[in-house]
Length: 497
Image 1: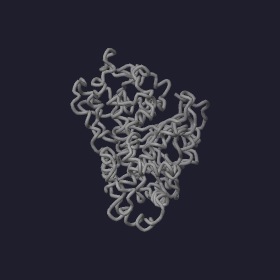
Image 2: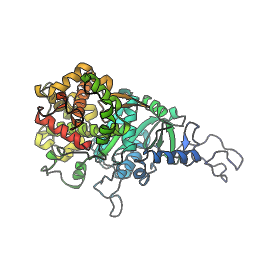
Image 3: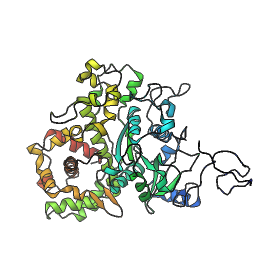
Image 4: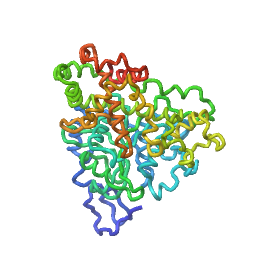
């Protein structure tokens, strides 16, 4: 516990949160926010809330607010944040909290990390806190679909796309959690986790629901400053901090792990071939009202493509970001479930690399048996190491292979010649990255570009309608492979087309 070094002899304190009757009592009773932060309950904070509500920047707020949780220990910001996020997404923990009720708090979180005792998943957290990677483990072990973004491998534009996805989606199905350095925000302390619940577009602010409510109240903070605080290097890991996009799997396999013996493998192999996202609104009006008026179909293909991409609005970008989130997770998960790695990928020995992360249901003698590895319990562990352990080239190998087939290379080849990656940051009032749900977590630019070209090709095929791009054969998907057609149809579903 942090204690005050001195104590005023006066019974009255100048601190805004201090009890005026308190004299020399050890410890602190909350902290005043620095000037750079705007208290949520201040007059300005209320005005910002009202304006953000009217501009669709608070779609993620209400579910988080109704499950707002104060971290149970001074070092439990990570587990406390995760508990609130899981409850806000209505994820069932699959086991009893108290009485007959299933609910998350720090003490009901499960772990599949064998480095932690099964009955004490937060071992050493009181003393040491939790790292960026450990938060990811806990999130996926408890039923969340999470994508991590290290600030060092991400851009401000990508962070802004994540803000749009978590705060402006009407479906309210994505959460944004930031891991940041408090000192950059002129607050006391260092590493901290908290969810982002709102976005004010006119003043470039986000609303942090600080889980350390005993220390700081919820507050609005400038996006640029929060970004800088995530770029700070964590002395424990030697890496930058960052953020996560967290959603709910369409069928929560981790719950099956908690509630059964994990012996039933009849359903999970097909679950993730189904459409993962539902459209919250169609982009057909954007095509008719915007793109049709600015795209000259007699121009060069390159000009048409660039015009389309640079005209995309924030509403469209957040739809694309959620589609990207789901399709990337689908391919990563299927690669892990099916152990379908190309022979030249250096990812086949995850079991040897991460033995402490294996679930107990996988016996050493049969750990390489594909059937055994497809069990739900294997999904939990083998997925939650993917962002760090499985190379992207392996996890997304099948996606990249889609565009190695001759029938699928026509549009992809044009995008490759254009170096389309340089046009995927959309520069309007604020720069936005088109595929905000995609995180590669490494410096493998060649693989990043291949995936970005593939995503762009699918998007362009998907937005072709009877009125838009119908006269340009390059965007006609009739001759592509059936696998690519499935992805195009899936994208159309996500975009409401």
